[in-house]
Length: 196
Image (cartoon, rainbow, N blue to C red; front, side):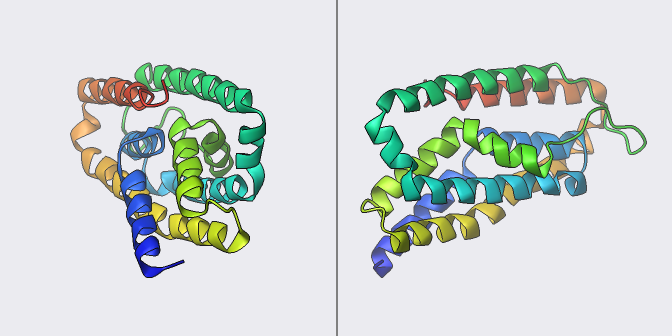
């Protein structure tokens, strides 16, 4: 991969990883409602789950979508339905921020890994990256794309967790927390617009 192509790939990884989407919104919301430390497994699940997804897309899932275009449409419908369910769950959350009692808990590592497979933004990012930066789908190019995302994605999603951490004290008021959760649910729904 040329220097120019690698630079463009890294910029694509950064732009898609740092912008709002289901993962970033859910990570920020998790830290704001729980703690930074308890959300680390969720963050690692997002990073490793997405990295694995990029690898699998590059190694063959793209061919499946090309051979059976309806499979991609079905995946899109299932993904959208699941994100609507998550948005409702976030909006209806009444968890109070307290060091003593937490209602519910953040996504686990495994849940976050599995969530990547129903995240429309993750699918769009992975399919586009492989199509543009590894069109021949040879193993070397696919590994470049996979490693680039693994390195760039983690600090980007961590930024959203830090924002949630900074908001935590302000959200100690139940009314503000409820407004925040409803706002995050709305943002999660708005992140579906490109998929629709």
